Image 1: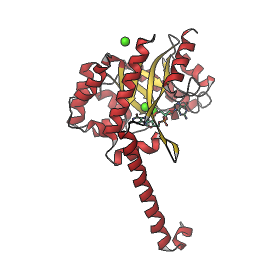
Image 2: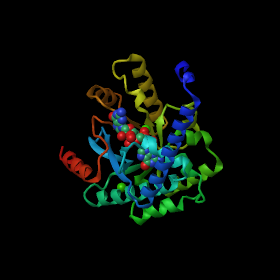
Image 3: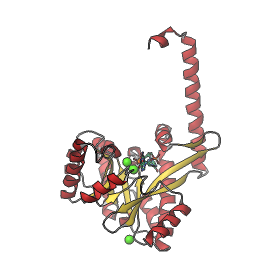
Image 4: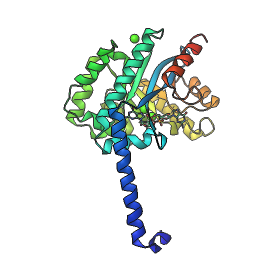
Length: 280
Ligand code: C2E
Ligand code: CA
Ligand code: CA
Ligand code: CA
């Protein structure tokens, strides 16, 4: 801080201006990429440990920028939210994910489900009944029950009537609801009591030190039990080691996802992965 104070003010405003204009440029590029449908999808397998098969896929959006290369969604999703581009981005993601799930179901993987991330902002629209989302799902001949909508705790926190109407409409149509990054927000347990979700995705920070840290082991074990007792499915994210997987299987955790099992894959690689693992 002391060093910073020593610098002439002009440097600051210049570099700040540069940053702002860079942000602005990125937003314009992103708007263009969305308009031209240049964003693509990667799909990460979610394994069912009981049946020993891939049961679900998480759809993760990808953006290859001609100058910057692969940009992380952790960076461009907030940008899209800020620039009012998230609805268009979300529509593109939904379209591609549904198209690809339909292709997969028709080519020998009829039981797969698709889990799709939704920004909280996407719940504030002029389409409270989610008719547009449901139209896309049905357009591809999909059963809404095979679509999982991933929301974060921030949605539950802000939960207004408008959010609630949309969520109820989706669930009435048969869609499943998941809480993402569970345990990273506030008073998470309270939401489980008041909010009807089907699936809870436990944030990967809870598995990081498993099985070596006893405190973390007990905590994770407790969370898994609570969620199961509430009749919800548990997905553990960020499984990177064999030891973690063994621990989770012992605890009866049915669904796991992480680099140990597979990275997010483009469609063709995914088909290869699924074909290879079907025989196992
Ligand atoms: P998320 O929903 O929590 O997604 C999981 C992230 O963890 C993904 O990063 C995935 O590649 C990564 N991951 C999976 N397994 C492992 C592992 O074993 N270890 C580690 N260290 N990481 C793992 P990704 O694809 O970069 O996405 C980052 C975030 O961007 C997502 O976090 C999600 O919040 C957001 N996002 C991605 N796609 C979409 C989308 O289509 N719509 C919206 N609204 N948000 C999206
Ligand atoms: Ca089905
Ligand atoms: Ca997610
Ligand atoms: Ca997550």
